Each structure stands twice: as structure tokens, then as C-alpha cells.
Length: 99
Image (cartoon, rainbow, N blue to C red; front, side, top):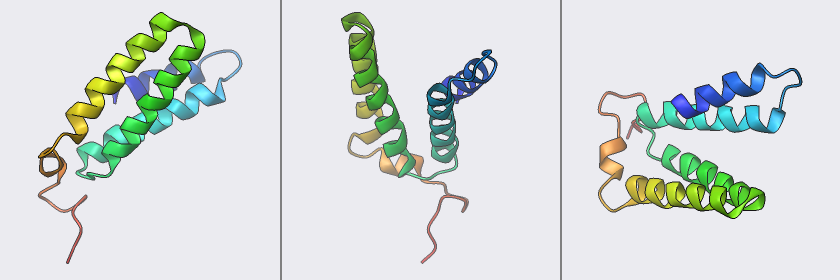
């Protein structure tokens, strides 16, 4: 949430709004909110978002791409390894599917 919120603030306060950066912040922020709300599928939003950043990082320079790539691998492992789906299920109801 901090990364998405920070991106929203940074890109919306520039003299000319960077809409791609702003949209990226919105996706990161919503992905984090939905993950905390218990929607297990929101893990894929965050993995896709950081994968996109890794590709963009490599387009800028190799060092930036390597850092984003390392973050991508770490986040993907943390969110998608076997057994983590249950940890992100909301027990109360917001993200829980009803039978």
C-alpha cells in the first residue's frame, strides 16, 4: 500500500501529471487493499504489476532492471508458493465467496 500510495502522491503532484505512473500507483494500491481484504486473486494483480516494473526497469538500465527483477522473484515466491492461498483468505466475509 505504501508503494502504491507513494506513487499516487508523487505522480499526481508533478507539474504535468505522469498518467502512466499515476495508473501504476492506482494498480499497486488497489492490489494491496484487495489482498488485505482477503481476495486471494489479488496476488496476481501485484505479481503482474511488479513484473511490468521489472521489464520497464530493464529498459532503463541493467542495474534498475536487476533490482526490480529480484523484487519480482521475491514477491512472486512469497505470494504464490504452495500453501499461501489460505493465508490471504478473509475469514470474515469481504473477500470470501459464499456457497
